[in-house]
Length: 295
Image 1 (cartoon, one colour):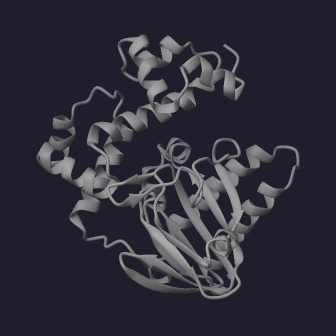
Image 2 (spheres, rainbow, N blue to C red):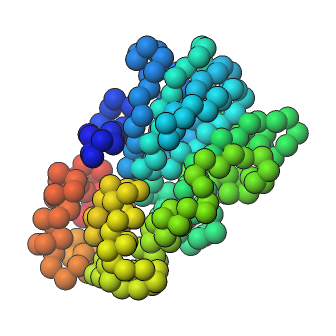
């Protein structure tokens, strides 16, 4: 999908679908997509996933902000959702792409606000023997290994390992990482705080004016920030978050659709069903049938 000169993919580059294990994780070899495209992956973004590129061997140029950043293995790159990036591969690559569902991640870590920075940081980190980066790298390899095996408790173990990985990413010393998004960029700081406020709010009905007041900026300023960074309006971002929460709640068969509707702040179940279908292409009942949840 192309949106105001920004190309989005719901799946990996060139794909509009992705099958997350447990709705959480998808792992794919790094380098294959580049080979299929003459070793060039054009600039694009994903609005539904946080990605980790694990480079075990090889060399590539990371394309970001009209610059080329040389990346040599062993190293890894973390890329938040809505962040444009591309690659020009310079050699044969051995590595992996770990894609993590942004909405499920946020649900997992919403009670640990101090680690949210881990999925909002665009960074490159070289893996150095004996340093903390090697410990993080080992957790990544455990995730990849578990993903490809079919042992009992696989999905539970994947959830545990992903949680461990996010905490490790947050704990990486600043001296070992290169942050590619300027932390003094006021718009990014406001954007991150806005997304945090959305997660902390108990109802989608909270107005844009109230959010802007919390941030001590005008609603117009907030709209410009969201448009510039996420290519969405503040209302779209709020609605997307609450509908992603609805999908998680719908996996619990003990809760009625009406109860879920009211718990999220929607007053009319029929309106809730309409906007849910507009977002997902399915009614809440159809969604439950697809994921195998019994009412």
